[in-house]
Image (cartoon, rainbow, N blue to C red; front, side, top):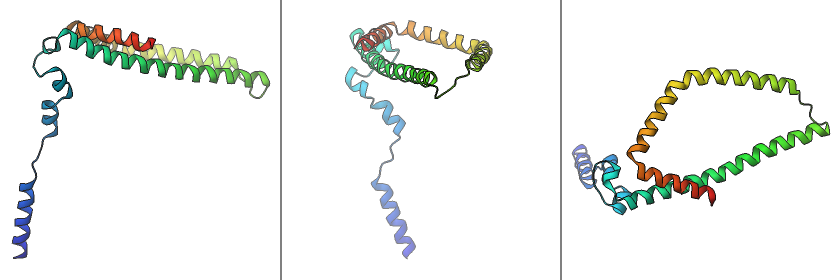
Length: 154
């Protein structure tokens, strides 16, 4: 009798909850669909030119702004590290074997050249795919480039 009661409780619990497929829900309820409208087809057909320029411009500005900030931080860290190394070398705290550094840098260059020759076909296919994407979505790409430049300037 106790087993039957537990089965009834389990069945009633299953009836209380609806199973939602998250991927289908995300496809149907995208935030940009609420903002720009819902349609199918290529992006050039989905949204107006103004919407495409706005989307590209906003994403480009964000990317440019982040690129500018991160670039400044990286440049400061690398420059500060090199300056600190020079000061400690000049003061006598650290002795740098510049011949060994030069030898290691040349070795790294040769290694990179070998790797670059092997990666050339993959890089060419990536460039071709990127160029094709930009051609298909020229309006949003133009907005992205403009936004990126504005993000770098701000």
